[in-house]
Length: 139
Image (cartoon, rainbow, N blue to C red; front, side, top):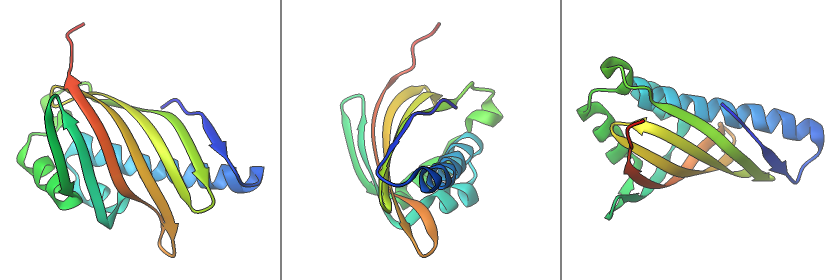
């Protein structure tokens, strides 16, 4: 994963926050890659929402809809698909953060994704996922 980060806290705090956020993103990635709901559940807050477009179709759903979708599809790791998820940026202010991802070849689509996170008593978690999906182009 490639990363760039901006922050409004001290350098020591920033490094610790960035590592904790990267762990959440990794849980998200592993959950999608392997169809692993335990990993996805660790990444997302129970109240999270998922909104965005796949081509021209709008989705505005509770995160449990994402879980259902992940369960219904054969995951990339079992299909042999080269799904990748790269962190383009992490921006955080206090106990909130925005992570921008480039996801390639997830079940036939590439995604530009923004994850919005909060840090509460349980640590960092995704409270919303905003995405735009376009068909993966063959190389």
